[in-house]
Length: 315
Image (cartoon, rainbow, N blue to C red; front, side, top):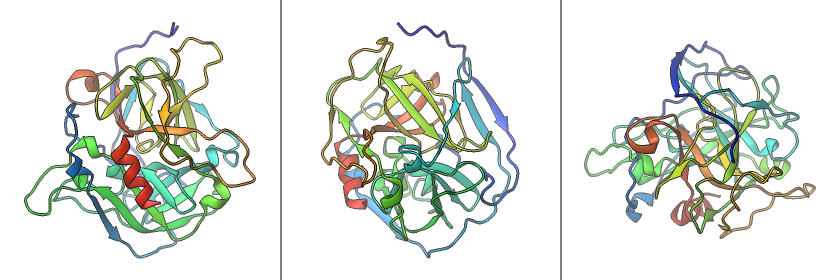
């Protein structure tokens, strides 16, 4: 049994100062739409993208408030060294006015939340000056940085080109294609989706919160699930948007047996890494909002077959 007791969520605004890398800029605001629980229309996964000019560094950020969604004790722990896999494949993403987290899925592509590449809806805009820093330790970028040359998101997130439509949070995922093959040095994470319900399964996430420097990780169980989402109580702070969520080995055996994952594309990191490859089953997208389990949990965009198919195209 899970031995932790959780308090009611407390939401608090946090001011973030202006800074250019390596200091942390402001977070991308998560989508405000209520999560949908019905099957997402396949047409919403139609690919949209934009080509962007390569740049060497992100612009300085304008201070904006961030949201904390921490249930009970803050269980985040620092990840060190960030040069070790899978921390090396966890990416700090900066862009004009904000910051997110992402993770390498090939030698040149970063997966992340949709709102980290496009503000959402047909009236939204693509992010600019997007730069990736794999394995950033809060002070230095041990693998250097790479700039975006193309951004991808599904049409369900970017909206219809024929009539004004809002972003649908069921499609809150995207990708950044880089101007270099930095993933050949950092490794990358696998992608998969469960073939059975996963509620109660142990998970880990790691990313770049704005309230502290460097990379941080936490563990929690899946509290509930729907067709498009998992609901968790990993501590969530702005900047962690886009963080990978993957199964955690359970030495204490207090989690149910993990359901198997369907892995259409085994994508192990390149040599010399011989460590186990985490398979990502969700992307941390936002703090609580809306009704149902999304009102009292943090929200993870679920990896599904259409999501994997798009990521395979974007690799």
